[in-house]
Image 1 (cartoon, helix red, strand yellow):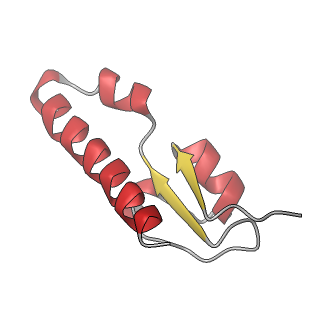
Image 2 (cartoon, rainbow, N blue to C red):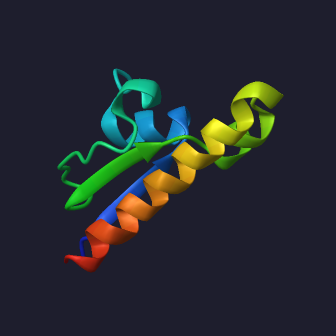
Length: 79
């Protein structure tokens, strides 16, 4: 069986199903976690939550989300 290098949990539901109910995306956002499922599991916000963010926070949430995705890409490039 092939083990993926990285799994990204988009949103709380996905992150908790991968990392356990104690996982909080707001606290574990973009922190790599070793898992039996993949070499690294990373939790981040779900794209729809970025879209639904209040106008005053939407731009910041979008920047954070894309920074997380760039960090995953950079991590994969090192593999």
